[in-house]
Image (cartoon, rainbow, N blue to C red; front, side):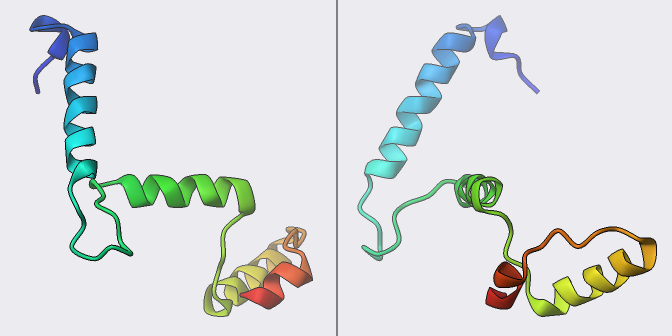
Length: 86
């Protein structure tokens, strides 16, 4: 691993990386409906959305979780209206 601060400094490194990201995003996408992304960008977007709106779980996941929660005495905090959308 390299320490950017040992070379041109952390601020210069961050600026260069921001420039590269800008260049990547400026490329025209192969599919206009799917913009150019860098590794991790979709995951970060999904994380922000889930923190704001909650996670969507399929019934095949939610049902066993509810079963275990009931067995362990954990209250079900998932509103029925949200669970019904899953």
